[in-house]
Length: 104
Image (cartoon, rainbow, N blue to C red):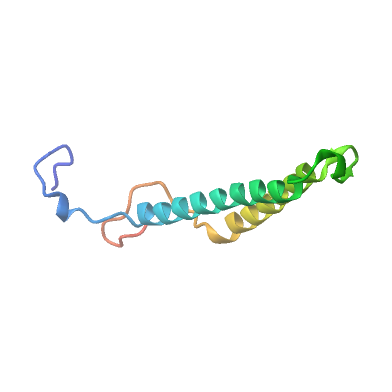
């Protein structure tokens, strides 16, 4: 029987938990996605608002750059939610079964 409180082990003998591998990939992808979304919103707002305020187009008293940024953010939110629903795997947080190597 293994002594789970023992500190006498080799780190290289530890098998990497597949849940951590999956979480690392999802976190990296989410950071890249949200960083790209933020840059897209800023870029769209800059392109739409890079002019003299007298010459700007207004929608319901809001400048076009603001409306374009909000619309871009809403599109990014919808894409993110669809990706979250279809792309993320829900893993059990319980202990792994030693015999099968899968979550209970």
